[in-house]
Length: 408
Image (cartoon, rainbow, N blue to C red; front, top):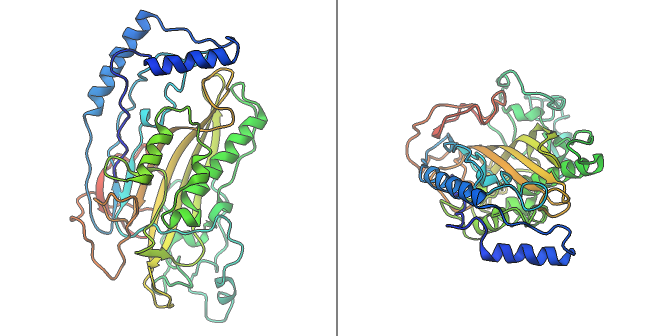
C-alpha cells in the first residue's frame, strides 16, 4: 500500500493572503488579544529555504506487491518544518502534521483484514463449545488470557500447537492471538497525570480519545465493512493542516497516492466477512510531555482479523487471518499556546505494517489471500517476517516491499 503524498506547500510567501485574512478575522473576533504578527523577512527567507528542501525530499519514493507475504513501505525521512513558529505564543502545528513525520505503511500479503470486530465483545459462543469433552485442541478459549502488555516483548511468541485449520467456531486456532484480549477491552488506557502544562483532566481526555480513535478506525463493524470512520474523524482537529481533508479524500476516492489504509482498517464486504464476532488485539499506550502545552499519546497495537469469503455460512468455510500493526502518536495542545481547536486531537506520526493482504491494490480495502487459493500479485521478493513479533518497533524494521509471512 502507499503512503499519502506530503501536501504541497504554498509557493512563495510563507503566509498566503487567505490565511492572513483568516488570522486577522480571528484577531478581530477576540478583541485583538491574540492578534497575529507577520513574520520577519528573515523568517520568510528561512521558510522558503525549508520548503525547497521539502520539495526535493518529496521527489523520492516507491512501492511493490505479492502473495502470503508481508508488505512494508519504505520510510521517508522526517522533513524539517516548512513553516516558521506559530502566530501566537507557540508553534502552529509545526511538526504536528502526520505528513511531516515519518510514516510507513507495511503490508503482509496472505489475507485480508475484514476484521468486523465489535468494539466490546461480551459473549462468544465458543466459550460453551470449548468446555465440552474432547474440545480442547489449544483453542482460543482453552488457554488463559495473557496479562496486558506493559513493555516491549523480548522476542516473538512461541509456536502454538494446531490440531487442524482454523474454523468459524475457532478462528484463532494455531495463532498466538488465542491468548490475546478481545477488541476494545484490550486497549488499556494508562493513569493520567499532568505534563507539559497540560492538566491531568486534559491528559485523561487525550488518552480516552486516542482509544476512541483506535476503536473506530480498527474495530467498528461498520468501518470494517467498508464504511466511513465518522466518529474518528470528529475527534481530529480541523485546524491541523491537511490531515482531515486528505483523510476524507482518501476515503472518498482511494488510489495509490491517497490510501486510507494507512490509518483505517476496511474490507470489501462483497468479498470477505469477519469469521465470528471477535478481533484479537495486543499492545500498549503511553503518554509523554512534548513541547510546552503539548501532551503526546503513543499507541502501538497489533490487530488480528479472522476472515471468511462473503456469502459463506457453513462451519466448513475456509478461514484466513489478516494481521495489522499500527503505531500512532496523537497530540493534544493547549489552545492558549497553540493555534488549535480545544479538545481535538492532532496526528503527529503514524506507521503501519499489514500481513496477508494482496499488494499493488489501491482501492481502499485490504485483500486477504486464503489458504486454498493462490495470490494474484507478483512473486514475493522481500524477506520473511513473523507478524506476531512485537519485539521490534516499526522504526527498527527497515525492510520494504512484499515478503513472505512465516505464519498467520
